[in-house]
Image (cartoon, rainbow, N blue to C red):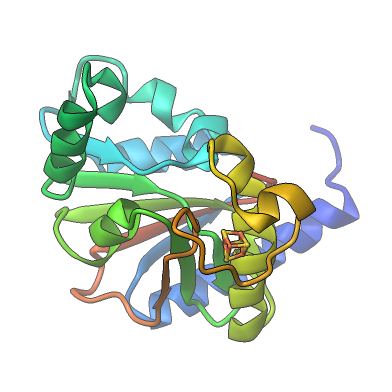
Length: 214
Ligand code: SF4
């Protein structure tokens, strides 16, 4: 086995520290130093035959979870199967009652709080209420030192990076930085800080010792 780098050793320590902080706030939380173990943990939490949906997230793609759930064992609620814009909206509405909702977080503070920004708000609606459980997969790159740093990360790194996936005309798409816009197409219409998981254990956070998403 290859020796771990100094960076990986730090990730292991930080991941365990933040998982512990999350558990103190009633999230279920784990840290894994590799993607495969993280995906195995996520799959172990999803009973076969139950419904699964997800929000826009590069992390669940990059970790390999989105591929793994396409195995016929789950009832997938997938907006990308819609044939019309109306059907897409209807599927997004159904996702709010999925048994399991998969997503990442835009930032996580070291004291165990989640920070997320959203344009339409469907991803955050599911985080707040509806699905029986929410599984959050996040690379250690999402961890920020303080709550203020995490909010800053969500707004000045995650959102201006994520914007490249959308056909919108926001200032950050041109400048690469946030100018706190109030445009109709702003991807930061909603900003949510999840201080505590209620009911306890409904949100399950799986931290991974690698870079995932933005
Ligand atoms: S410029 Fe607007 S859309 Fe872009 S990150 Fe800032 S608030 Fe969000």
